[in-house]
Length: 337
Image (cartoon, rainbow, N blue to C red; front, side, top):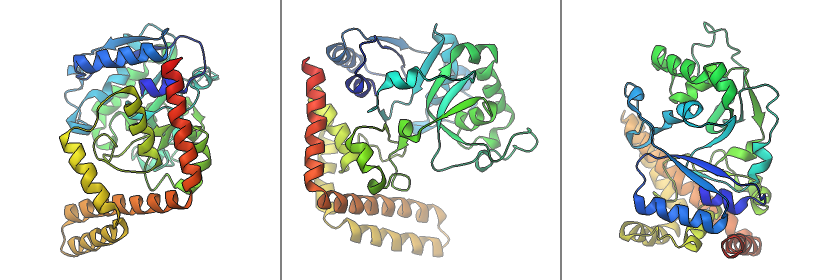
């Protein structure tokens, strides 16, 4: 997230990062600091290591981590009037200054709509008793432009934690669920390009290709199929792999190398593999094995997605090649000037 944001900005304005550290190895931290300074000598990175004990009663998220709740501590950890919170799995391609200077019009935050859940009622079963509009827009909390002064004055973080404690059954998506309830009517909606989900059901390549060619959307790798956890191919993973390669970061250890080799073999038959897993999911569902059906459906979706991407790239080879070159040159320019 840090390096992609610095590479994508044209602004000369110094950028200060406040990174919530959930266990970054010292070598990785030093590597990141060095590359950030190489790209933008005026930037600063501050390390935040908050006490997460207050969240011990709440369920963990990815890898059973409590770090997702740490964003609620930003109003007390950061001495500023506003801050742009970003999940670490966002590849930032747009001009950040445009977003940071957004007029909040007296609201506490600016956010982008959650493409999988359009309305508050879909993730807030207590909307009626809380007096909330069930058709209010529902947002994804991976990108939040926060007015920290308003967060402090209105005790938004405290109220969010209270909602989590009092209504745990109503918080399917942890603090995101609670924030949607507490910030009801108190945020501005941003264009979805600021937080575009890299998920086959919400990212049809035919719809977003022109924007992607212009690097005019941010990529949020929301699922467990993140390119650093599972090797994959296509425009969205290429952006990430090319960035790391030019930064000189070796992502491909022995395990991912073996996975890459296996993937290339399987990807030739991606459509057939997707069909096979879909059939297995059906058989599992018929046998009453809901977990087995869900897992096989998820794998089927992955390979179906790869089949669609492969077909798209094959039909746009020249455009795809030119776009790859443009991304590579964009990174090189920032690293060498």
